[in-house]
Image (cartoon, rainbow, N blue to C red):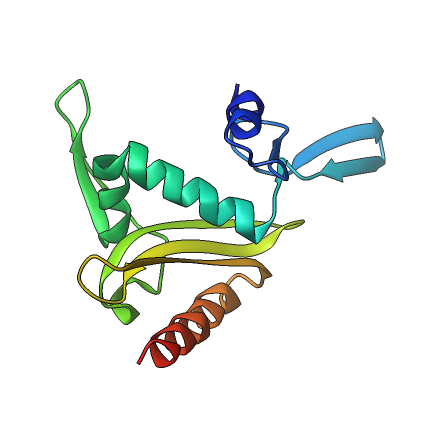
Length: 149
């Protein structure tokens, strides 16, 4: 269904091989393993997907700009879910964020941030390192803000 949705939204580089996007490990023989990425896509299509998600599900994305989420399960147990985006405190105007990391894909980060009232910008980092994705994003957002001054 995710592939059908991406195709119908003209996100032609997005391909999903499982629901999580996590790498798929397959045993070819008992001592030889093959690993395939769980998903592929360009930075452009990732940005367009973030825009589509924000337009369609703004309240669900809002929680991704917080340091943590507090939810109560059906059995009444309270849970605190920490956000894995270490850059949250470094960006003013954060609207939404999505982190990702796998051995094959490396460190990935997509954010939506406001550069002015009603002026959201989407930035995407793909193929960085686990920690480097946050530093790379900071460079992108700084360059964006300087270019808009």
